[in-house]
Amino acid sequence: MGGGTMGSLAGKVAIVTGGGSGIGLATATRLAEAGVSVAIVDRDGDSAARAAGEFDGLAVQADVGRSEEWPGIVDAVMSRFGGIDLAHLNAGVTTGEADITKVTDDIYRRAVGVNIDGVVFGIRALVPAMSERGGGAIVATASLAGLIGFSPDPIYCLTKHAVVGLVRSLGPQLAEHHITINAVCPSIVDTPLIDDMREVLEGSGFPLIDVSAVSSAVFDRLSGEETGEAMVIQAGREALPFRFARPPGPRAGGTVGQMPPAEFAAHDQG
Ligand SMILES: NC(=O)c1ccc[n+]([C@@H]2O[C@H](COP(=O)([O-])OP(=O)(O)OC[C@H]3O[C@@H](n4cnc5c(N)ncnc54)[C@H](O)[C@@H]3O)[C@@H](O)[C@H]2O)c1
Image 1 (tube, rainbow, N blue to C red):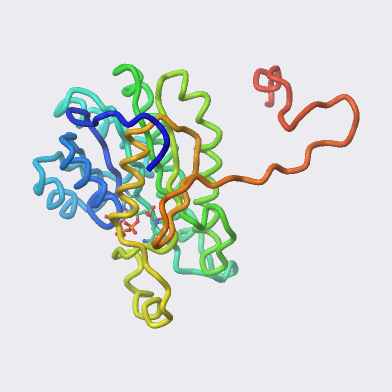
Image 2 (image 1 turned 90 degrees about the horizontal axis):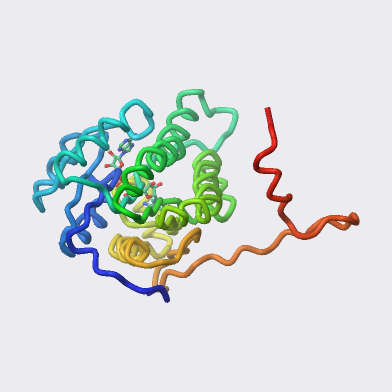
């Protein structure tokens, strides 16, 4: 449990991407049980419909990596539920390719498209809707591979680091709209995503995380007030915010601290 003030989520509206399966399905179910109206967005329309059918939710078939689909996603949720308060931007794919010389353009674009574009376009489309309601909460599913190097899937690792950097950067800006944003960074979770590896993992005794541990951490962050954090989720541990080491600052004279002056944000970088 986080240290923030927990508000009740009953009566709020949530959108869960990749909600037809695995972690997203677990979060959607948890939210629905807490009295939240849930929209499941998934590329797989059948699993979205099946999931939404379990709790009278809304199923939206869409590819989150396509920016032109986001206005339609937002409209569908607004017209069914009248607003959006919460989002779990969770749809994601692995590449299955460790060898950088074998990463085709298609493999690369697909991973970047779902794992990065899907989160960026989602946040961009949802912030105005949440602001209209006076605030909101966003959780993105990154991965432990967003915090450590992960040689079995370097491109996946790249995309998850991107999500962590985005979340850490957006905390202060979204706070002005009373929107929190956090990432969850689980190690390996028992979902259909790891079907090919399950036997090997179980044979080696590697502890798989139950989806409920991830959905609980997501739920806590959607209810709490902390922002800009990356929550590490490991089997048998409470979720905890990752404490990043501070890189060394400059040694040259005349500069104070890590960040360039505020004017830097305004200067023309073109
Ligand atoms: N399973 C793990 O070990 C693990 C560990 C860390 C992080 N994650 C991350 O958790 C998230 C969910 O993974 P999961 O394990 O539940 O996988 P999953 O395969 O069970 O579910 C992912 C869902 O996302 C949907 N999806 C994929 N691409 C989409 C797109 N472009 N638009 C809309 N929907 C799309 C799929 O149809 C599927 O229903 C992913 O971001 C994944 O990278 C998983």
